[in-house]
Amino acid sequence: MSTSEKHYRKIDEESKRKAILDSGYLLERRVANLLRHSGFKVITNRYFYDREKQKQREYDVYAYKEVKIDNSGSFAIYPTLVCECKKKSQPLAFFIHDKDKFSPLIDEVTISGIPAKIWQRN
Image (tube, rainbow, N blue to C red):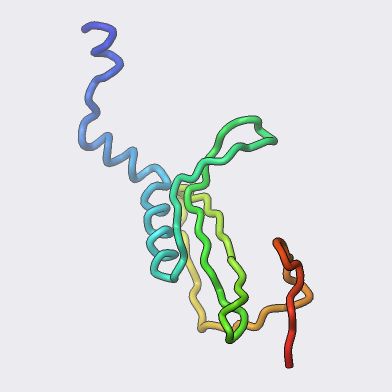
């Protein structure tokens, strides 16, 4: 067997299946689909530079969406989720509850951009 054949041997179907099941890939797909159905814009496998580790890394799932905070539609916040999906030997459970009424906490909102103010009326 030549050197190039050793490096490019085909993996059998069972090994492929086991590799996928042992990774966090399937969870990543489920989380991405759940977030898309909840109105988020989703990017999978988004790369970023980790300054602490001095290397390139990736987010498994990066999601954001616009949430209007007034009736005029002029103001919004953009909640952002960064998810790391890992294969665990124990089951994972998500607890879902009724939606809470959204009321932004004006004093606790971090502001960026121009103008750097939140106007409160009434």
